[in-house]
Image 1 (cartoon, helix red, strand yellow):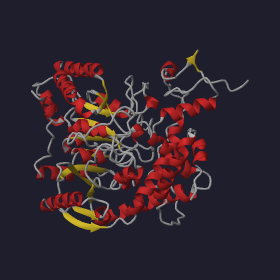
Image 2: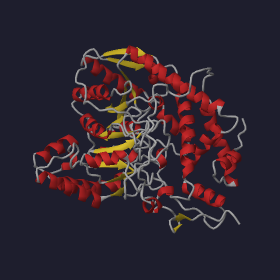
Image 3: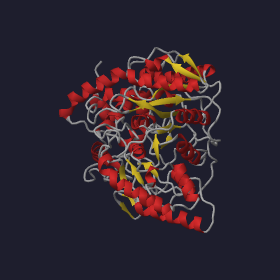
Image 4: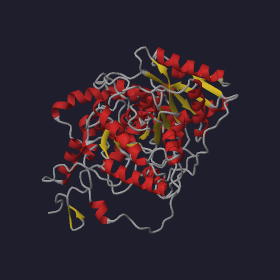
Length: 89
Length: 482
């Protein structure tokens, strides 16, 4: 089966250098061949585990983390805002 | 006094009898780390200053006669994908090389509340993706039993640091075997708790429906001690955590039925590993247990289901690393798209990219039903097979890994061979069950072999009780002299 690795890379937001495409295609095909080893299954069951329900927390206002703390790892911040490349002319 | 050789339970006893102080325990730990790290490379950072402050706090409490927590003064190493406020948390990735978390993971808060001392952060495969600890951006960790071999992964630093007596206890995380496999290869005890038994808040997400934080120790008692301190509900933060309290280990083994699933003793597992596990089961039989042959027929498909589900979740979870809010900054001179592409392509290592690509593929339009949906259906089937098996037995015994520790570099060029290392452990995560790996002998090269014990959900008390019985029967587990 042919897999368009360039398209997958684009969807995954990853650069795949042209010189690596052929080798990666081969490797990726072998990984996909491995995970294809699945039985034919038909089921009307839900795919969620019925006895493993999640607890939802109450919808209430609680204090959040301080802005400064949340911005300390931002590569570039000015006046409490995250700086990104210009997207609108 | 060589305190580093002592177990957590022994150190705790000495501390409470005031025969030793928390600062002395820490000094000994740091000296041991200095002495063996050049050979083992288990730590990514040693946090001596913060550890010293905590040790002093414990000593002051004891001097004043105040109550101290269950882990008072005990050094606990932390896998570097578990957030520690103010202490660098890298996930062994270039992407998070300089990331300083603004909050603690819940397990870290619980360790602090239990008065544990955290001497540092431990190496792993990048973002916990790998089975050898060689996918770390910084360095590979070595197996203390043979430093030319891998410690297993992904929690290789957590297992090796305990095996090398750098710390008596450590925390790892297990998505497909990442606590149990390195425990098996390094000859220590490692527990993957039931999904929901331990809060995942602050554990950097790989595959959220499979990830679980688990403890390492050199004895079963120590692992039980650490597990008891970290388990329980964390409802404001982790919707999947359960209100569970560990009651301590079960003591009675009489009439215990030990299931032996034939699918785990097939051609993919070495004869030495199979024989060691069966010999261990014989010892349990001598202690009153009853071996029962069982079958888990879907095991053959488990690796496929695991790599589809975990990679799908990883591709979604790791979408957050875009160079904007934190992490590797990427190229900020071009367009926003250039920033995303450069940050992700330069920040992630090859294995992480492979998994993101696989996850993106199995979730992409036209392939979802063929891969992801089928894998999720298989997940339900595997879980049902375990439920049926536990009608016939109380615990299940299998090898932890298909072979003993392999040489550094031996499998790095073949991802499929590396993926096959998880063959005995992935089903436990897929079904959300607890599993513990205990040392059960050595191969001809003198490398440790692990036995995995699997139980029904929230059966940690029984599981660790059986493990403890086995440990007592063999007269304790060997510790490598370094």
